Length: 272
Image 1 (tube, helix red, strand yellow):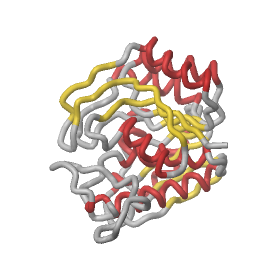
Image 2 (cartoon, one colour):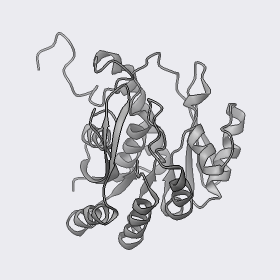
Image 3 (tube, one colour):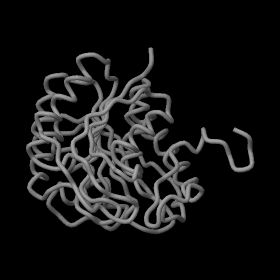
Image 4 (cartoon, helix red, strand yellow):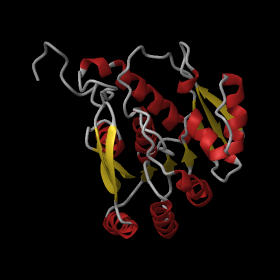
């Protein structure tokens, strides 16, 4: 049967992040994607110019409509906006009890615009995080969730992941892209194991939607039946390829999107 995944996230009118990035990722990795939109954003590669929240009851209605008819092998959660929406999503997850829930705590856009209200951080940490199978924060997001400044050294990352794990999520993938340098190390805390996910940093400014894409790719591989550590490693390789191909897209004038279909689209100079 076809593997399926549900993304619960905000819409990006520029197409590089959010719902659009998630559905592109699902499709690129051979998974049928469904969606529940939590917010509409007016944004492009330069900035977020407007956010329109979806009523929590309608977010819940979208989730129910999908689960009532379509088998959902994995759920990815991204931008949620406010505590009321977080409560609605948490309540429906408790009702439907999906096997896999990948929570990407989206708080700030690549442009620097805040996407999660300060008042909603506590709701996400206390009500939604314990329902997740995997949490995928970057270093600033981890700091927000823990109420402390983000760490600045690789050696500090496992301890931060452990503190996040103690908040109630059994698995944590802490992303180290904000460290700078030639490497972009991530650390997966899986049960009692510390598993480093290596990868050289790609020299490009076209990184819009990287966090969304990585978490969606993990959800896609989980939906296809991969074990969690393998799903994370495969997703990291997929994202690295999408970033390496990003400059070839030439989209926008700011932080452009990664190339979700780098393995599928015809290469320049070839016949489709």
